[in-house]
Length: 193
Image (tube, rainbow, N blue to C red; front, top):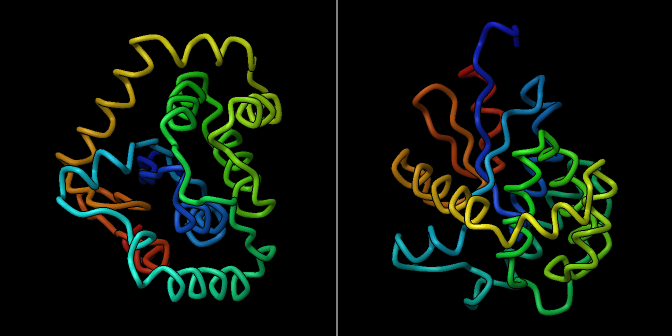
């Protein structure tokens, strides 16, 4: 992908195991990491009128499917945090702060790996602070910033803009005006590039 082309945008939420798979795979499949855009999946669920498969009878089958994908992709075995899905609001505000500080990719990777490779509780402030340090962020500055209206508003606005663009779940990759929903669509998206 040449530098004169606009990078595609990958909309993600840190609570999504599919977003974990997409962020791990995207650089290889697409040739570069897309621009990462944190959005609040819970708000998208509310707008579309239904929530996650994680609260349905399909849960066990979907978990098995995700674990199978991770194996096929050569990723470490998934370890699910106790009580997953967790409350991800704080994590997503932290991701929004990380984006503002040009560190969203390393921060998202750190959080997603702790969550899905190590089974850690990423709703815990302490875990997020460790992830911030791993991403080269000032953890204390992040802890202060996530309570500010500007960070909260930025996440809300990004989520609203994603909805307006047609995003109805995560991960969704936007290439030009085309949307590719699901990490299993990365290869198809690569052909559009």
